[in-house]
Image (cartoon, rainbow, N blue to C red; front, side, top):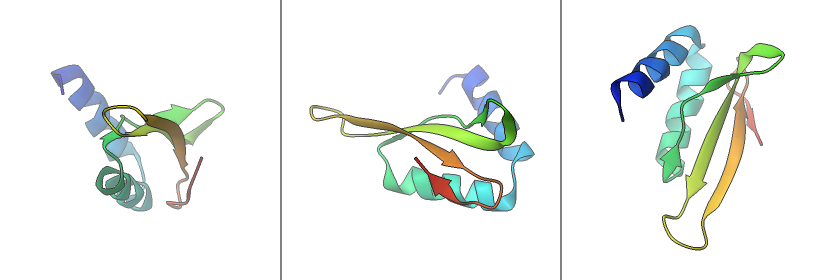
Length: 74
């Protein structure tokens, strides 16, 4: 992870709720690759996170939303 990516991650985690941080930690445990949370367009309080499983085929990628209350959905 480069310094710019790390700084973006820390900023998002600092600006999120405790429940969002807990849900993000859960994603880190469940997926092979977890992206940096970014604000959802039109709803700055909700995060969008890209997740992936499998380094080789089949490779699964999807986007997970994390609401301020920690609720996640795709």
